[in-house]
Length: 204
Image (cartoon, rainbow, N blue to C red; front, side, top):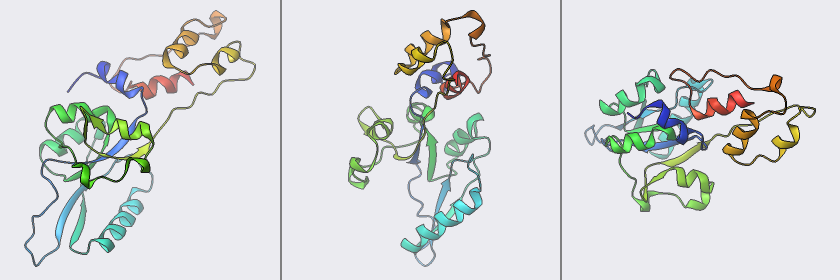
């Protein structure tokens, strides 16, 4: 797994959650007379996740009467839980934060989805469709698109400069070279949870 330092540059882009299919494929583990089981790992950091799981299961099983969803606990998602679930083949379909996408592909823990099984690209934001691809292959269906927001006071000495920021390096210039020294930003970026999205959160 590449270091958090290398993940930062990817995480600065729009973090996107993808539903990806693990190498185990769609579960066909039951005999013809019993419902097939599809083992699903959903992103764990969602409020009222039990209600969401129930709704997902009801809607899916209504459309696919021969399949039963089985939700798998991914444990500590960002500290090995996602990787462990895929390595042990405990999931068939899982939601993946795109900061992990290249690592999972290089580790051969997920496989591309055939294009004839995918919805039209017009159903998604272009940035989401691009984030689901690696080397021209599609590894997931865009599911959630998250963004970061930068809030600043109207009377801030750097307010005018902030209004014209459109790129990360421009934001860094404002933060690294404030109009007045007392308005400088101090942040501790050490530790394993300092991904790019937290970097931008510190900048808020």
